[in-house]
Length: 316
Image (cartoon, rainbow, N blue to C red; front, side, top):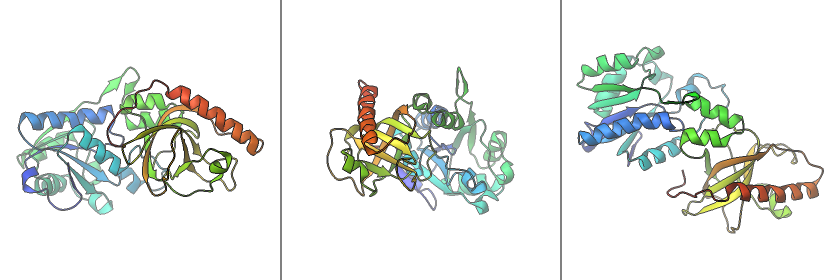
């Protein structure tokens, strides 16, 4: 899959069908939009593309918001590639870009830079200064550039419309199972392993430490996790996600103990899937109590992960 961060889409990829959206999380609803673009592209023998934005517009207009990302841009692109997309156009989003009119977005971006023959969006997609363009405007403005436009209705289940907001709510409520059902995969934090205080090693439970960065903060606590390493291997483990109330000063971190694995992970990228919430963070009475509790958490995590399929493919 070609990844385009600047400049015009090259000739062989022009005339494609383009899925438009932020697609944070790439959940079931997003997959319906991208899936429709992919199906149309294949039926018309055209390239299938996704056009997405970086950073998320909410991060530009509301910089005071706490971290909310369900996926990094790199993760999204990997997910699009696994889905079968031919190319992704990452549109840099800032206040200057947001000031463009709806007409300019269609003419300059979709027609000029991307060379789209057709675009597919969710029914609630908006674009242009002050969100002046909607799907009806996309149809009207696109026609002036020989771009066909269609909208895909929202996907729902028994509890309502599937959305990134619902997924965030599940994660904050310590329900990774419910989040995974809407995502179609476990919520996954991907990052580079950093050096830490090495207290876990002293206690007999060495950990790989990953900063949370721009990711949404799920409920703090201990999770049964599955870790995908950069060499393609998959290892079960247990993780503490939070501020580590036993350690001074408090530091927000994801600390992962990998079961039945040894080696050096510093500087390597890992992807940590949250499979089950085991307990909240506790401040225990000393290091002996902490050691006993970690041992119990390991037993609980192994039980929670037993029998769950490991899946395959890249660390997403």
